Length: 363
Image 1: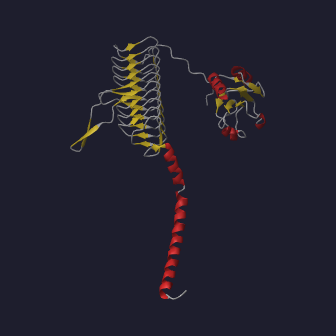
Image 2: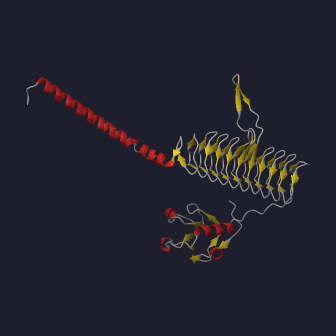
Image 3: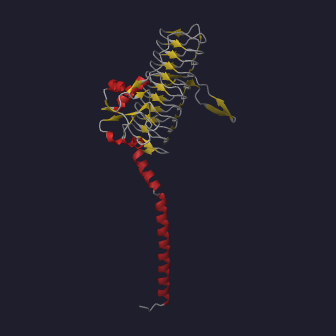
């Protein structure tokens, strides 16, 4: 396994983070890791009490802990920080520096159309393709095997990782990041039946992505049938998300892994669609609304409302329903017991009534 090339001591990390050191200052550190998976030579973060259960078994060489941590709980060397998460991030950035920025150039194996427009500082990696009429803004980087279609427009300071695709006429704003496998502008899913045959409807629109958007690996954003599918500025989309044709996602919205948004739905700004949620088409999701994980949304959601369940409903009501569902086995057992008791009482009443009819003068 290849290790990081940066090696340091615990004292150097204490100086870097202004943390208090307890233990051997010469402790060698070359990497960061989670406390439950850390190995010798790695430093781990222990900021949340729930991870304290890993203290007896961790193989980390040192820990970053908050000032409230009791040092008597471990013999490991410690960096004691007022903001342990920030200190750990500083250490991670020091030990795991990013790869050097590509030198602005066009790799000899790349294919760039003669009439494509490349601004200053553009770097195009091996085996990339930039089609006719495309334009790429200043300081944008195309990693190897990226594809930019005919008349597509890419803004400034964008980063397209390997195997990303921006198809014909689609538009990316500035500072957009597309991770590997992203497809921007595949055809929307549109068909009509003609004598029992599914006939494809031409998808003539585009995808328009705003500024400061990041889209995770293997996510697809389909082009509109007409007009544009739009991703608002500042929106962050996770891996394996499907955004269908003519969807509009507002600014600064979050869409988490494996969510699916069907055609022509509109999401407001600062909304959240959590993992594996599914939204039907032609819905209106209000500003600041939250769709919880695995929710199935089949009607509009007003601004600010959080929903859960399938079909999705107010999260407070659905949580009560979930609690009631967990109680169903006990409730069924109680109903059965009460049913048997009711049957026994009914039989006893019937016997008493029969005895009374047989002996009308009995006192």
